[in-house]
Image 1: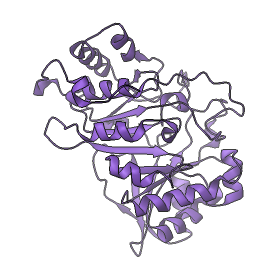
Image 2: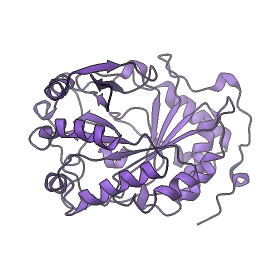
Image 3: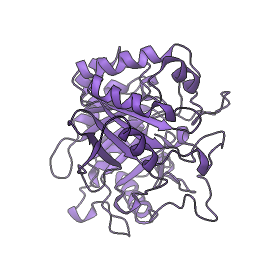
Image 4: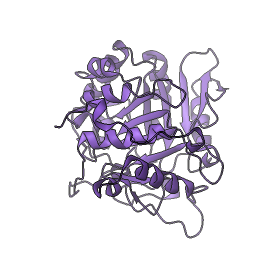
Length: 348
């Protein structure tokens, strides 16, 4: 792999303050999610098809770094590395070290986060923290080994993920967030068990409504376990009380329990869309910008770079693309079209 020396991708132009990314709806774009692979060692029922017929399109790590540097120069303040499963990528710690050296337009360090299925996390958590990772989110869709294996289609996976969560806490990546996609008929019976898990393990559990992003195209409105149903189930365990959002653009509605122990977030893009405050864009593993999870169009930033485009030309391409960011998604409305790519190829 080529060196990721910071001097190797210095920006060739100095961005002005007015160049901070803003879309035509007046939303400041400060969050970037970069998928550094569309490979995954799980085949979760709500994400991947049962057999692996995917064509993989990972880029060299140094190319993700160059694109990230241009985004940061335009006002990005938070970067989350995703996949696929990002811990499968060689060079991940080195990429984190280089990203941790970048500064926002206000001179602050980047907020660096990562989403993982946790299977390889136990042996990597401390290295990732030392490389500059600030926060970590672990996808975990059941607090039951048998049910977890049925969802991931990987036998014996639950113990490894649990060990990874605990290793992340020891490494100082707390508060660890644990994401659970709820899918009716698979794991809605896990809501109370996850409430107990949050309190016992000292992690933030976030339930996510099932979205039409799976390869098998199984989504239907009937499969969605709604925010209302989740809060009602939590209330059968202990009374819940709402917590204020950490930021206007936060995707999760936050709750705790009557005694203040444990935190639950509910991300409800289907029944309670939060598009009006959206602050994020995505970069797919093959270098294409997606302005919304449910976009029908990709915007090929990597193609600009491959054709010899300068940093300034890449920045102008990013600005034009972000300007046309969708006002909202249209899930559940007449004529809604599922996105042109599934979640594993977009980046979680």
